[in-house]
Amino acid sequence: MSSPPSDSVQVALRIRPFVSIESGSSQCVHVSIDQTIQIGSDDTGPKFRFDHALQPSATQPQVYTTCVSDLVDACMDGYNATVLAYGQTGSGKTYTIIGPSVDAVLEELAYHGGDEDALPPDSSKVMGAIPRTLLDLFCKLETTKRHCAAREEMSDKHVNAQDENEHDD
Image (cartoon, rainbow, N blue to C red; front, side):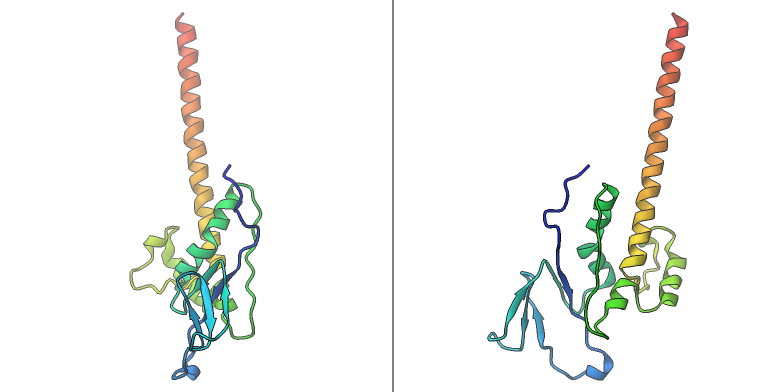
């Protein structure tokens, strides 16, 4: 079992890109490489530091890899985890957690085949955190199941070999 995450609560910020009605507006939140955001267009605005700060250009796979995939691994090791999306109406919570629509997610899942790399190259990979978590979890469980079955088969062969050796004596 691996050690639990070092921080019991981590905070990630995903800044959504402008929607069409906002085009032409100037960006008022800027993300630095050190996970700090700054409000305003000059250096005088307030700054806030997060465990993860994601640019408006962040993709769904990037959000999942950065914020959620380690939690799935921790769950597989027996730890509890929660992902909570919080924000005002229209800030992108549903898009981040589910995707643009259930139909889009189902369409993408139809091509998935259990392997994210099996998605068509032109796919936008729109699935949000929940469908990605479920796929990841079930893939990890299937891998664990195959590993356990292989281990059991090896153990059975070892026991059979020992039985044969005892009967030969």
